[in-house]
Image 1: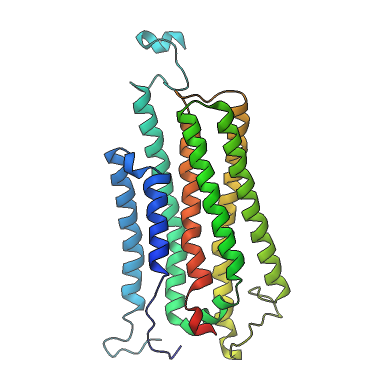
Image 2 (image 1 turned 120 degrees about the vertical axis):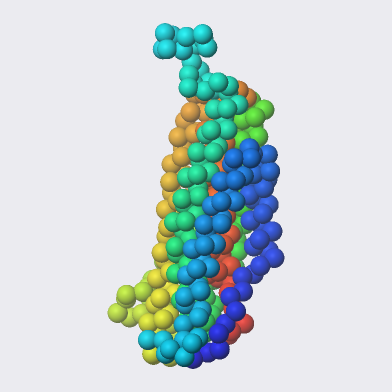
Length: 69
Length: 228
């Protein structure tokens, strides 16, 4: 609880390479229509909004001297 | 049906009356599956978000709880699932080539690997019961964690069971889909001209695989050096 703020590390390289290979080749995004590609990218963008905006709250609590509850 | 299809001739599985070409129908099916998968990404996204929030709040407890999971079994299961994704790709390829026997063989292999994954998962869960690592259990106790932090350890295991449970549920649904495909494939429904159901079921199966590729490092491998 009182620990210094921890960076969130994912075992990045391995994970993202695997995801990329599965999406591009197994799920043949590479050979899909432009509309499908747009849907995939758009969906990931919404996921980023979900994660990033939530963390702007939790990661910045107490930043301006207002003690967190 | 003959009246409705008019000048387009008789309706087939590969070309329903509302589509101009078989290509258009196939694209529409794929797009539909992707839109469903996007809703699934948001669905799982909520859990990943909860995980991110609580792990950043209690990093040490999460690291200790994470190290209590068996990473060797987890890694083997990851391999099994990736293998099942590969056989699924081969089933789709057999569809493209119109090899009806091979479609069935690869679908059965996919089913087999999916079944092994679920069996191993069930064994892992059983272990958690024996180790008293079930959140909400009166006897819950995680070794190496202060009494005041046991609640935070329960939080990790709540997320562990919710996320792997939701993933396993998707696997069970996937098994149902595979069984349906196998029955249809045995009837000779699929050919080089029409294998869209195998194709979009493949998209779903790979998606479930991708979720696990995220779950495995997040739950099993995170900050293992801190937990020791």
